[in-house]
Length: 333
Ligand SMILES: NC(=O)c1ccc[n+]([C@@H]2O[C@H](COP(=O)([O-])OP(=O)(O)OC[C@H]3O[C@@H](n4cnc5c(N)ncnc54)[C@H](OP(=O)(O)O)[C@@H]3O)[C@@H](O)[C@H]2O)c1
Image 1: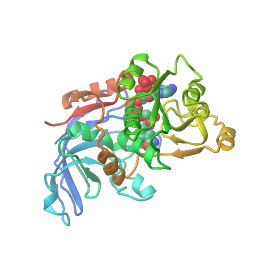
Image 2 (image 1 turned 90 degrees about the vertical axis):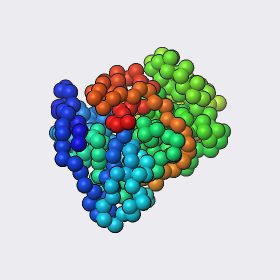
Image 3 (image 1 turned 30 degrees about the vertical axis):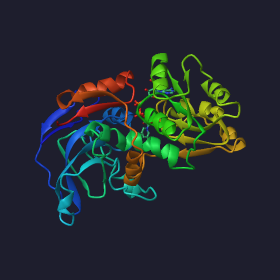
Image 4 (image 1 turned 120 degrees about the horizontal axis):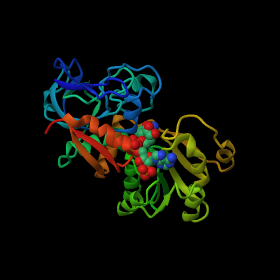
């Protein structure tokens, strides 16, 4: 089968021809059709993700395709199922654990989905709606599930709540769409007025350019009506968290998702305490969360689809920061 492997941060990905895979007991062989990229894939490629990592890993975590074969103990009826693969296929449901995290695709020592086929546990996939493309399905496993988990995995947002979404990348665009789907108001921040205008077309009620308005947290609280927003989807990390804490209302919730401005840093612990804010770390979610996210019926925003031959260009597109929504690679027709 054809696959790509990492080849150092600066060099193009290495195209390889490898032996075909066979599913073992309790496993599925998936014929991959599409994949999409996440910010994580950039930092894995640059070996900045943290922890030990195999140097020639098959990159990318988010795949969709067709069940092509099954191992012993799995019903042959599953052959032909159209599926999206869980980001952590061993985390089928329930509480998070180290053993479940261990299987995260396309990072550490676990090969990912930039290949024609992959073997995963039989419980590691969710069925795609019949009329969805594989690119749409492949948009969900990391960004879609993370956004869904932020908004519904904790106390859960309600119609009429105000949600602040930072940026217009993969996770944030999903969060905007999910929040609108339940009737919440959405405030979006972005570095670009053009992207804010696009976010409004998707239903955002207000936008703030975070470059022009460095105190965007205070501005968001004003827009929300004084007390602050009910929920923040915090993708920025150390450089944005304190603004997020300014934006959120007393008793509100901040979902801590991202590291775009780095790990660590000073945190306004006083604000968390005095405003009784719930800060909830989110690490993607389970396969059961993936099924729930797909059931929302929210069709993902796809930025651009690259061919398998041009996979390197997909990485460049994501690195450019010009994308809105998900950057995809079509692996097979
Ligand atoms: N914890 C988890 O489970 C999990 C899952 C998925 C992703 N993540 C993390 O979440 C973050 C976003 O991931 P992604 O895949 O959605 O990334 P992405 O598609 O590359 O989007 C990144 C977007 O973030 C915005 N941004 C960049 N710097 C910002 C800043 N200082 N303040 C506000 N927004 C900023 C930009 O929006 P504009 O261009 O509009 O300015 C950019 O388009 C990353 O740190 C990623 O590692 C975590």
